[in-house]
Length: 330
Image (cartoon, rainbow, N blue to C red; front, side, top):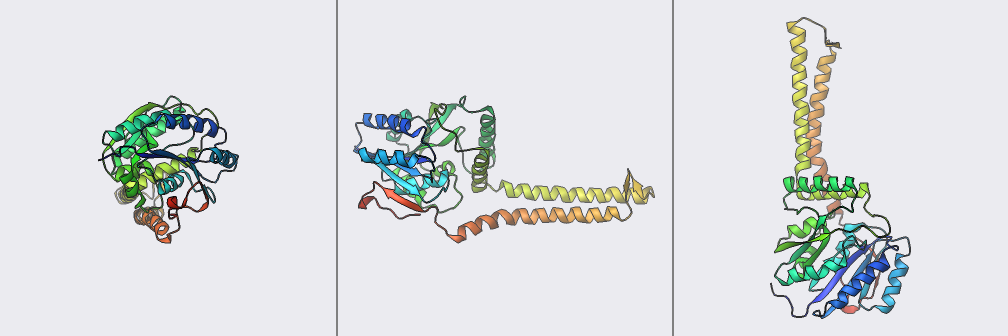
């Protein structure tokens, strides 16, 4: 890989109701970018994911005095992964850093990401060397998720990595060719391949504001990750159906054994006359239905989302872009 002598750097930052932390984030990011003397230029591309607080007002102020700031504003909230996608669609850098604005991913790590990129790596992901700032429940569930993905997924997802990473231009171009609806970006940027490595950093506490990933969104993101890179959920449905079917046969044998070998119409408190054969039939059919529905349901639902071909996002405004920067909306 050949790195330009004076590369152009893009920083993609999705924001959603981040008025409490956005000024401090920009101050620290701007200071770091000013220290990078060997770049031909930089751009900070904020993606406003339908914020309802004063985030838009703060971004407007930044636009007035910093020409490197650009803003994509969604027509509504489309979600964090889609906001990252929009930023990558419009970033023009030779290297593109994607990160959140909550300052748990510190801008001071960016020079280290660039150093690894100059060493020849095309994807440099940031690895959290400690998660003491996260609640214990999040630490445990995150460890379980990463362990599960490493076992059942068809990608080698590094432990304790988020979306904070640097992507080479060729990786961004490859990523743009992926058209799937349900996105797990940290998995997709691994799936495209290329030379990859990690940089360790301590994850800080959020200095202000509240997390935009409550339990429900975390579960959805984890589900998108599992279903995008593994058929394990379908296999679980199959195994569950098989188990239920086997249990129904065993129960049938239990009923027959008690009825014909002991001549009892009641066994262990259960009336076996008529009721047993009915339950065997119901359990067997339920097992078969789980097998069939488990195999069809996930494929059908995701196929339905794909064939609708709705755009991933709709932009309300693009601010700070000149004509050369205009890109087709996804």
